Image (cartoon, helix red, strand yellow):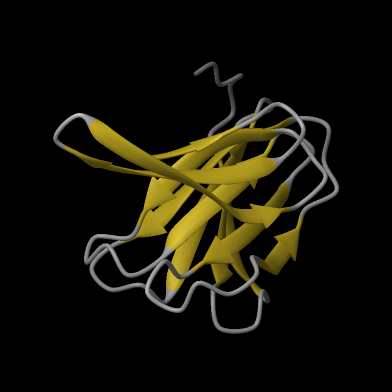
Length: 119
C-alpha cells in the first residue's frame, strides 16, 4: 500500500496477515495531490498541485526523480498516456491538456479544451 503524507512524503506499507511494516520511500518536500501507477505497475507518478511531477520506481527503491515542472498554480492532475510508459498527460484548470515525455520531461504537445476543468 502506497500513500503520501501532507508534507510530501511517499510511504509504503507492506501488509501481511495481521503484521505490517512501514517504509518511507521518498520525500519531495511538496504536498502530493495524487499517486498514479503506470499500466504495467513499474513506475509511480507523484503529482503535486504546484505542477511538479516525479517518478518513483518501486522495484529500484531509489529516490523520486523530478520529471517535469509546469510551474502552474492552475495545475490539476497528470496521468500516464497509454499504451506504454513513455508519455504523461497533464491538465490545467483553464482546460489546457499537455503531453510530456517521461524520458526527459520535455514538452511534446498541447490542446486547449476551451472550457474550465474540474476534478
